[in-house]
Image (cartoon, rainbow, N blue to C red):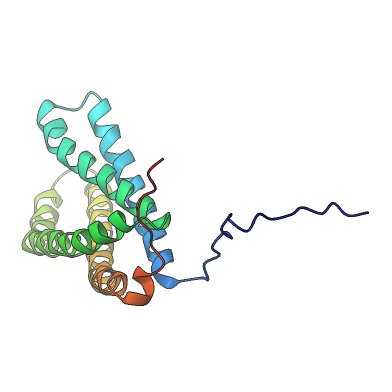
Length: 172
């Protein structure tokens, strides 16, 4: 005989959410922020020079803040939705500025190639420069993809249908 459980009428039914692309974007952003936080944490905890650690601290704090806001959005907290609507365009601005700075430094690869041509093991050094340049290009492409994605996320979180899925924090 199956076990029958009576449901109290005062107990609300759990809300089941359908698959959403914006939710996947939030999870992706959460994972990227966690990866970035680990990278900066590794610099902070290593025996790197103090100048590198000083530069890494603000990025570490920002990565943890992004993690908290993304987790709040995944849990459908209203405060996190409002914060992410502000945070996403700020991240876009940061991506654009850092991408522009990367483009300004593009000429350094040609200078680096010229400087290693006469040195011993130049072929190995040229391979390292090529690998660095491929990573650089990948970073620029990634920034280019994230800009419209984050702008779309900020717009989508502002839609009334999405806002209705979020709730105020429960006081307990």
